[in-house]
Length: 393
Image (cartoon, rainbow, N blue to C red; front, side, top):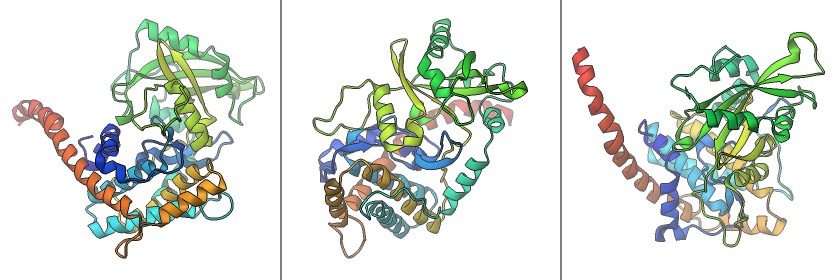
């Protein structure tokens, strides 16, 4: 989180919703109740592997999904884009243009009688990632994630040893029929494919996993419809603890789901290609959700962007989020929300005034928070490292 102000935004969802709950946050309009991402930043959108073998661009991390206010996704994505622009040393006028393009893309998703799922021309940064996603292979997935050994997960910086209770719980988990069906879901596998446990390890991941339990599980897949070497393949499961969302539920909308069920339900509404590849469960008193990793699952990394790239990406991702919201709304709700988004404009910026005001305040809040974060954590780490580096010189 100390690498840049943009990285800090990705890991500080709670601070964002503290601002939303403050008097300043009440200026954000209340949109129609719908499933929202809840943590809609750049790193949480990107190519998702489809069970048919292709890739689609969708929301790809739904840890904070709730039935909430769609405006919160728009504001958070605008903040993420603005901080990416600042990290790229782009001028403020470019941030204003990026915000306009984000809104234009979001509104585009509300045009027409029904929500369109047609794929528009991809901006260069997304197109490059999509090309890479399409070319990904199972071999490359395993090589990048666990190394080239399929007999075990090598422990080290990314993977830590599980205790006996955790390992046994995972072995029991993969014996469940819903997990077998999840692995057999892919078009390239037979519906009767059988799975067996090979290995598992605690998985050290990024900002969204801080303080949470997470494991990688390596499975052997036996496909009765194939012969020879192709009969036996491997699968890598991501088992992640789900906790309560930082995003607020819309009034009266809390369904009383376990955290894992909430993530699964939101994913199926917002990102069908991802949601249909997930299962919710309870393990050792933890609510978890499970998905098989596919080669096409990639992040869109935009730590350094040009002005033109930023604008094109903003428009396209605005459209992706708009489609995810709109497919849940009826015609009347869609028209009302489009009208709200199209209003409150000024002659200086073609975006809702409430969005621009929220963005200005949130950038200030997160810049302050970022510097304090660096003082409290990164500076201390540097000082601890200084004696060793001084001795080396």
